[in-house]
Image: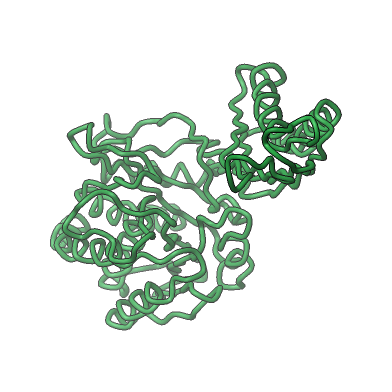
Length: 391
């Protein structure tokens, strides 16, 4: 059988696998049952593995004719602290936790690729390493920061990965040259005031008002300090303060995220936040303290890796279905790996556009027809890279 036939025969199993992982999501650094399920599947395939980064797995497939050239294929395995509001037959059975970013799909596709490649083991002329990485969603402490230091990962000549994307229709894909996703940093702001009675605000230093002033002032940074042709985001996503209606609290806390593709702007963000905070401090008499957390850098695809990937895509997707999807301000910790690498966005959107909920939505779901296409892409990539190495 050729690759397409092997994957077509595997489709029912891929659906079962994906639904299993969707029903049993686990949050970052807690993916122990997911780890065991992955290991059980690899055991059945006879592919050796080691546990990595507490709740991750690294498996190695090396046939009798494999050279010392190694390609790593990575999937992230964690879920999000989100309560699933949709009602599929495979709805999350772990309350408050959901695979709302498609990592259940990534696990399934990588296991499917492992099965297809294991059946071709005697023909392979490269070694294939499967990286099941924990904690991609833990921005400030993500799994890639640890897995990238593993000797088994460092010795990979290149890495590939994919991300299911619900806004791209199933059957389509995007493999861009250069930037794909932005840096994804976070920050905290503590606002220290002086609490008191809500009816006597003149006796207080109100951290709620100061925090609101900070939120408003921050909006001018992107609109008035950043080149309008430069993608940039500064968003406040948390504002916590107070416990009741007649008390002005003594402290408030804000948190948010900073996104950009520019190294210069990223390096400037901490100072910008501090400057705005100090200005608000002066204006409101509150004390504002900022702490900046660097997350994954921008995801930049390596040209040679994309060259190979596009050859693989030509075997999987119709010519008009491979597009350069718009740059994404979402982050991806695959960017932390130092190996040459590329990330494909795999279409997972339903034909009915009303069902295409975005990543991190409590209604997120994907068209499972995409599963086989992801497996095909990984397998064809390995085969195309083998061809290049033989030239």
